[in-house]
Length: 218
Image (tube, rainbow, N blue to C red; front, side, top):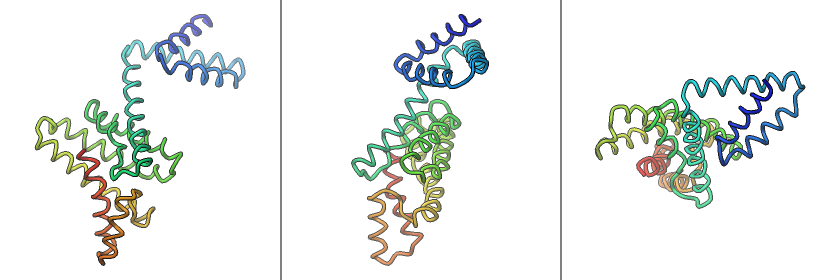
């Protein structure tokens, strides 16, 4: 039994290719931290998970790699936006791609995962997980209705995504950011509108629209 479990462990590490080193380190850390009896149970559980995955769908690991890449796409885009102070977020490409390809549930998983990871840099990112879920739902529903088959349908889906994003995000901005967007360009628009005497809520909406429209349409 132990030999079989070790074979499963080696198969898993080989299957994940470039990430095998990280898997091995986690595997060793976990098993070295628990008693022998628990270690055997963990290996047994690992064996059962592996068997179920292989019996259910032998391409599940490809799905996992695809989702991981989409999460990295979101995260990398957000870091790029922060570093260059761009007027767009660039953090929903992976969410949109996953929602279009696999549906809103997988898209929401990718979006929320990105919010959780970015939350280590900015804890307020956790709150905006709701926005990621809404984006995934809208794009997933539009894809199901084949809205992206035409230019008009694509633009309509972009506008719908922008509007729903603003509806969710602006109240969160008001509660947690005093109305600021968290983007230097959006905040600049809000500042100019404040100098012009525009009321608080309309300028928050316009500032968020300035950032979200270009981001979602692009």
